[in-house]
Image (cartoon, rainbow, N blue to C red; front, top):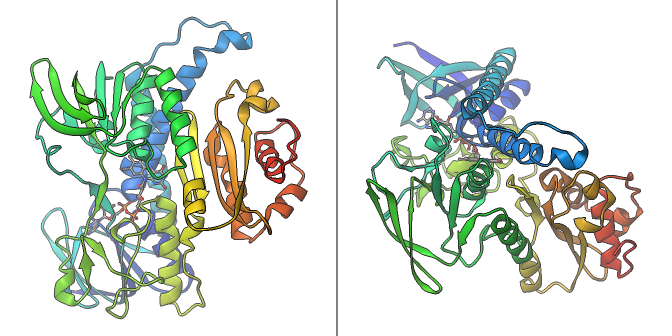
Amino acid sequence: MTVITKDVAIIGAGPGGYVAAIRASQLGLSVALIEKDARMGGTCLLRGCIPTKALIETAYLYSKARTFKEYGIVISDPVIDWAAAQSRKDKQVTRLAKGVEFLLKKNKVEMIHGRAHFTAPGALEVVAPDGSTQAVSATAVVIATGSEPRIFPPFDVKHPAVITSNEALQLASLPPSMAVIGAGAVGVEFASIFQTLGSRVTLIEVMEQILPFEDADVAATLHTELQKRGMTIHAATRVDSMTPTDAGVVLKMTGPKGPVEDTVSIVLVAVGRRPVTEGLHLEAIGVPVEKGFIRVNEFCETPLPGHFAIGDCISTPQLAHVASAEGKVAVERIAGKDVSPVNYDQIPFATYCHPEVARVGLTEAEARKSGHDIAIGKFMFSALGKAGIIGEREGFVKLIAERKYGEILGASIIGPHATDLIAEPAAFMAAEGTMTEMLRMVHAHPTLQEAILEAAEAWTGHPIHS
Ligand SMILES: Cc1cc2nc3c(=O)[nH]c(=O)nc-3n(C[C@H](O)[C@H](O)[C@H](O)COP(=O)(O)OP(=O)(O)OC[C@H]3O[C@@H](n4cnc5c(N)ncnc54)[C@H](O)[C@@H]3O)c2cc1C
């Protein structure tokens, strides 16, 4: 058997692996990128970020179209064509997957189609879909095998009406009713999509608040907003059993006020994702795995020299932009560059429900717990001209900064374009700018960004518009 020999072999072509491959090639390294799926792009592009956001856009425009009369636009009642929405989503995915493949070719990355496992340090066997095998040998290996939905009892019900995010993206029709178990970003996004498109949605979360890791203020506002839109939310509620019947799936739960029951046509289980590290033979070559995650240092290097792991298969935030950032760190390290580790304190988190939610840095509770002497600057979108103009006045910007020197510790936003707006406080934090610099920056009027300046003014105790 011929052996493909490269400077770097990368397993997995998600946003971790493919970005690492392109950067490695840019740095002059020869690269093999091994992917078991037929298309490049991984979870993010094929089953995650991109297809969900395409459907979220459909849901958003549908809800907007129903308010057109207020804007002086008269149309007949908008109707959802689910097949067309799915087809548009699929087109976005196909276009971007082709784009990734084009970029990999342009950067002379050798793409190998098949499932890889280690036979020795630096040595891989790749099994193609037709069963043929290919040996790959590399001086350095980057493991970027990602994650998949985590299913455990009582959610491990094998029935077509009990699905994960993978199937939720391919539903042939809109379900009349849906229970979403797990109110993290993935669960909340799907709940928001199907609720907006007309399904009766129940969102269930075992923790005290939906979006359990977000600022309590933000989570409470989102809770109210989703309820206003007709969603039933059970927080602090445990699902005890799920039983498929002819009438639908019967859910038995225990909430703060005792037993709760619901019968729905579809149950979407979104209780987390587990790393994909089985079958790679990692232990056999000396790469340690803890609770399924590959152990790495701050440069994404495993204890086995020359072997790196990035993205969802290590225990850092499971986000596409984190995977890409780690991929660049890993290959720059392999190329011998002077590289800084990813700063996990400054990762933007985004949930693309409506209203949108985004955060960078600490929540208010975390900042108080950390012992910082903080002051809060908060500004409601309801007082902002641009928010009124676009008809989205819900939510607020909350800035958390150290009182004396104005060091920005965190920012949470709920409201229109929160996921884009969060880039401003994130940029200030990355550049070590303080509230002084933020207050000096002139913000264009009328824009949504002004809400950030207004929150900064509120932080000083001298708000202008509130
Ligand atoms: C519904 C949903 C929505 C999401 N939305 C967002 C979002 O809006 N923003 C965001 O930042 N993140 C989002 N995420 C998370 C994001 O998709 C992941 O964090 C990201 O894809 C992780 O990238 P990765 O490269 O580590 O792994 P993945 O994207 O999972 O890619 C891993 C690749 O490795 C391949 N592979 C695995 N094992 C092998 C093997 N043995 N041999 C060859 N190939 C192998 C897999 O086929 C896969 O293509 C979302 C996730 C889901 C499920």
